[in-house]
Image (spheres, rainbow, N blue to C red):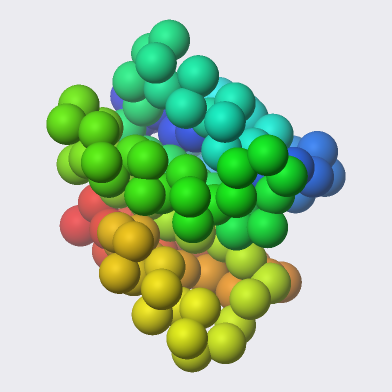
Length: 123
């Protein structure tokens, strides 16, 4: 189980820490971090990951653009993506799903919710 490698993408160091700590708490220790979509793509080019958790609102390249880039890449397109965001509007969720995210969490969230979403995606 611990062999799953996560990429946590968020411009907030606090949020990245919360995600990483939550992942550790539910049994996932292998977490790479990036501050925005651009840096996340660089990380993915260095080494593939098994699961991406990304924020939506970020500088340089936002989460939606990042998701579209991942899904457009032949080598990355099957990587599951969970988007965590403050944007709870239905249209936003539809846009995210269309872009290719597997699931969506609106902030604030509990570790339990994160675990359930990850389990259902990996299910």
